[in-house]
Amino acid sequence: MTDSIFALSSGRPPAGIAVIRVSGPHARQAIQALAGRLPPPRVVSLALLKNPQDGSALDRGLVLWLPGPSTVTGEDMAELHCHGGRAVIWAVEDALGRMDGLRRADAGEFTRRAFANGRMDLNAVEGLSDLLAAETQSQRRSALLMAEGHFSRRIAGWRARLLQLSAMTEAALDFSDEDDVPADGIEAEISTHVAVLRDDVAGALAAPSAERLRDGIRLVMAGPPNAGKSTLLNALAGREAAIVSDIAGTTRDRIEVPAAIGGVAFLLTDTAGLREETDDPVEAIGIDRAKAALDAADLILWLGDARDLPRADAILIAAQADRIKEERPGLPLSAVTGEGMQALVALLLERASLLLPGEGDYALHDRQRHHLGRIAHHLDAALSVERDMLLVAEELRLARAIIDKLTGLAGTEDMLDQLFSGFCIGK
Image 1: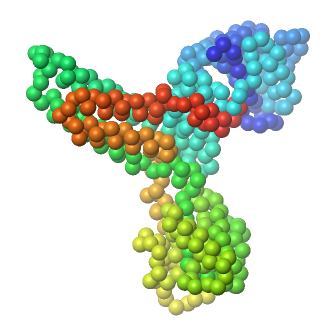
Image 2: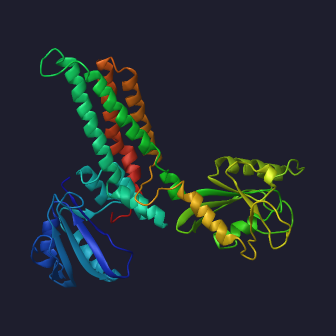
Image 3: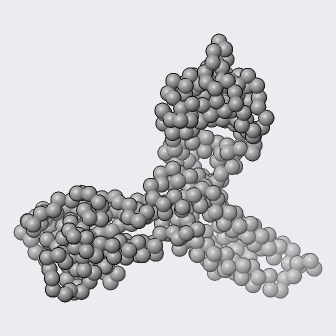
């Protein structure tokens, strides 16, 4: 990589401060040309920025020189902290763009260089992507842990243990006749360590789903027609998202509404009223889709008869408590008056805590979960052939290869292109 890149890395102007970053071998040249000098490394300095073409003043701001490789991208970097007006940003970027060897960065290019230079692995990159898209506190906490390398360090530990086990296996194969490598019991020792590692990987597979954390817990409101499902959805969403009517069958198709409740992302789903028979073909389609939503639900609020509970873990709601006064099983609730809403929210958050990462935990993407499953498979295979060291060695090698895919050392360019294209320009 011989070219250097620059981009606005702070928020959209106008703003109080604009941070323009430069990365690459021409970062030193860029900061010297604009500031007239090279400031001490990693010391913020005040400078009058001038246009190298004609010497005209651009802005007075702070400059920072960050020599590589101990930088975010692993390259020489410079930061220009300017006033955040559009004209100032345009003038500074225009001056940078006219310098030899500098060009505007593509989307995600700073992060891609960090990945290419070994400053981040693929899991940390995915965590950063999730952090940039985080809208709830639980999303932020989980993404930050992944971006800061908590999962990556765990993987590095697995890789080190696999290398050690592979060395032990090779020793058992090649040097079992020699005095410095005891033959008796080495197979059993390898098997014990493989089993411990397999259990550790299986434990990691129990981590919550990042897709559920990102897209929201699928909370489905279900029950017979006119049970109050749409009214309850609107109350939880905090807006009139679904049409409410006394006419049975008003909701013909399922309605999905994203909502943040107590800092947790939910996807609220209102469904068509469930009943055994209908002469309306459109309503019949809605009922079929309601049943499909129930099958895919993480949590269900059932507003019908307790005897018809669709799932053992469904939450039974005694809805319309402001209109129906007789005692019924379930949580008494009125979405109109607010009775029981606080208790319902508390219950939803309690159930959600079992589906999402807790404090200090991270969530795993489908890609990560897929590779962990393959690593566990190869470790299981190594245990099943424990007396054949040749096969054990091969299974351990395959497990190491999957770890390289998990960290991105053996990733495909197409997948990387798609991942980095989702980043903003300044990242």
